[in-house]
Image (tube, rainbow, N blue to C red; front, side):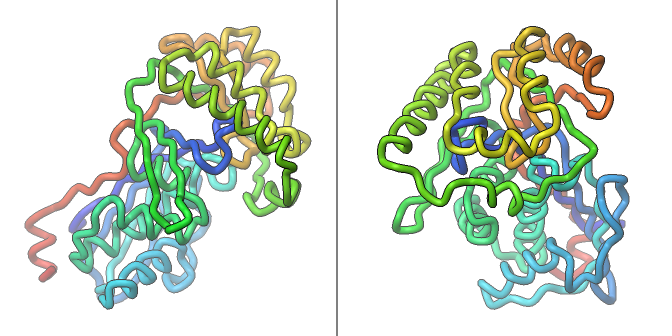
Length: 307
């Protein structure tokens, strides 16, 4: 029997012009069931997960070990059974959810009593930017900024009356490959224009003006113009989703998945129309996850483990 389980939601990031700062938690989940064991072992029970590597090579274990080492603690051996709804390398935060799960694994096993701010700092150090990890940790729509002194500021909104339609192709796209096509620098004029688009998009999202938010999402200047050629059916999906009633459609994270925002209750209608046109994609309607990562303790087994 498990001592405890950890559940972490998927995420989408950027939302168009909110590059490396805007994220949204979605109701697809990575779940870990943690059991007492004589040695470390990971068991994968999902079509979305590859064969489990040796524990020492597993991202979740390496994250947990790194977290434990930060606090001069040692991880006790466990068997971890993993389930996941989150497809890998599709722009839905699979690595970010694994990082959050690894930090929480160390937090529970080593009794670190980490605050949510400490978890976010560790996750950001590992991931490189806070957008996906903050969404999976906090839940909801999050806007983040890492300041020069290292502090990370987070704004969270959970009352969005929206459906989200994702278009997931069969191909994978590694984040590092999607970053290679981006320019190293922007001129001051280019950066000002791109930031202005992002500012209006965020203001519209927060205020609930989703029609304006959708319009501005599709005006991104930071990354979508450079990545669009890497995304299957990019232009067709944006055009047809708009015709079907979506407010706006953008690349989810680094891609290749795309995501549409539409009014609550209209998602199935938009998804049905787009699925007819996209035989090579899985089209699904998702909701915002408002709660973020969570832990479910089996108190008796947890105490029996001696921690």
